[in-house]
Amino acid sequence: MSERTTIDARGAFCPGPLMELIATLKLVEIGDEIDVLSSDKGSAIDIPAWVEKVKHEMVGIEEEGDFWHIVVRKIK
Amino acid sequence: MTPPLFILLCSGEHEKIQMAAMTASVAAVSDRPVEVFVSMNALAVFRKDVDGQRYSGGNFSKVMKERNVPDAIELFGQGKMLGEMKIFACSMALDVAQMELDDLVEDLVDDAGGLTKFLSDAESGQLIVF
Image 1 (cartoon, rainbow over the protein chains, first blue to last red):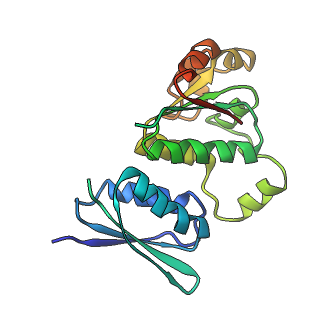
Image 2: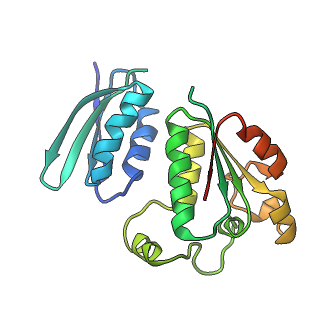
């Protein structure tokens, strides 16, 4: 059963949200999802690009008010 | 694996140190090995004990300090922890500044190194200067 972890990185600037995501990815199991809450516009572009480069998986990205939910699944 | 990235960091200006830290850490966590060579005015920023503020620079430095921008030294540390990064302190700059490796932030700088070796290593990848 996969789990979803939420990281509240709102207020942190690039590359803070990405670093928090990567640190958390090391701790969760393969198949688990991480929902990064980020108010940094750059991270909404950069995190999907990083996920594609290192071959994890984007579950989705959604804007909610003044921040984004960037949901990533750990693949390896 | 992407070819390694080599960063020659000599400016002590906050803006350049910050950009170098961001570049190094993001590259390292993106499956790209990174080597950083710290020399000249940049060396003092890596001191363990600093009098007053660690970072000084221009207008953008002021803005970064007011906002929640990641700390450059911590970013280098995260890059090392989460990716493949080595940081060398220029042995010439250490000598001139009469500093030892022990004077630098703990668990961050891997070793003292020479420019010749660094340049030779850098032939295998891309070199950026800050």
